[in-house]
Image 1 (cartoon, rainbow, N blue to C red):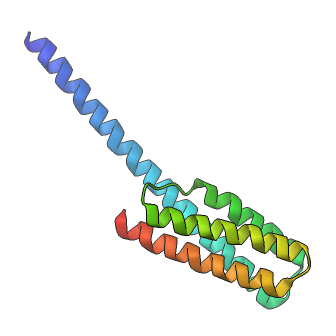
Image 2 (spheres, one colour):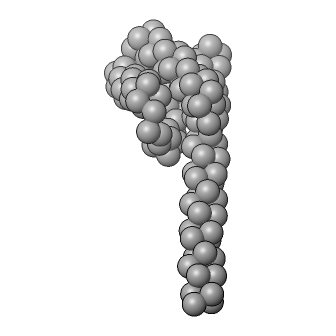
Length: 126
């Protein structure tokens, strides 16, 4: 009977350890995705300010949009801000593709501000 109790105890401890480890790994992945998204948007803003090729800027926006897909959280405020940023990235890409650098640039800057806020809020709770 003691062996059974010990076995059950070990199983419970192992599940708790795996759960905590998975949470920590997911947390690190989300933080990395946020950092990469912010960095790519900062690169896009710098390219806009330097007057670089629109196609290169669009590619940066597309890459940022792909990177942000790995950002997942159960915090509603963070999710809403992420969604707003994602929508702005889509609109920015459309504007840039249509040749409207002014509007596209504004939307990229707004998306950058949104993702910086996502980073701030996510880091405050994790």
